[in-house]
Image (cartoon, rainbow, N blue to C red; front, side):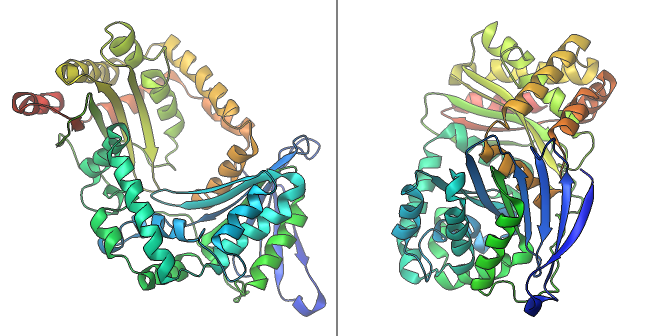
Length: 459
């Protein structure tokens, strides 16, 4: 989490002023788990975690842009751009990009979220230079031509249709709209049919140039890697593309601000001819920088994070009212959400909502037992470690940490934070979060009388 040492390295004499700053952020044992960071001239950050015991490496580039950076007219542009960066550069066609990684048995993908985008490739450690070259080429040299924009539009519209055909997924987009309304955090990451159809190649190119500057990017690499070699290869790739033009440029800071969500007791119903009703009952949560997030994680785990959780036991095990029921948290830079999801028969939706609301109210008023908290702490610590057992997960952790927090935390420090959570802290955050009046989002074939009763769940 804190820097344990730093040094300054320079390249050739002709680049004497182009100085890179290197720090060791986490000192691992025998080099294993060591996290190092170099900030290149031009503001590009390169973070690596070294694990000599594995034979793979995952290389990713994180962009400080997500759907919350879009205007209403540009809704879906970030995700559209994610697709287009795979369509070709001056050096490679779309087939060349995919074939290069396929030829070495690697995997390549990307994802767009509300506050960031990530492109990555996982390969054998010996093929890491290829992965670096391909991904860097995509990020710095995308052509974004009209023909590709038109072709990919059809694929994105199909992706929107696929999401809308999955109400268990779509209900979370509806819940974001219920809580945030018609602003960037409330709009879908994929965009809508209307906004995607209205996006042009010129508008997407302008969006690309604005948000894919090196100061907005973080390179993350984990596995059997040598930090200095990764830095040299990344620097060479970006300099070849002419992307490090301003040696004095500095990385942008993590997102900040303070957003207050004042949405309470709102209900949104989307009528669909589905076999199940899909519901999310929830309220404002915590920002990802809030120190109470560790206690919130324990609370969430005890409430709906596993088969022994209260919601699973009450809704599924004791009454058989739903197959899938769970709680979750979403933390953004300046706000957050807490939600409870359940999928059930339409005739049972009110029983499920009543049980969920009763449990939330009970925990808000009375807290969890010490045994529940201890079990949740153990479950959360175990799942944290098990979730970091591959190089892809490690790349995600160090890349997101640098982009969103501007610092790194070792796994041991994370486990210590979780273990240090006290019952009083969990009960305090339960009162603050669960004591608020919830809002509700529902997708399903509810009849008029059923729909009219939905407000009872948030009264």
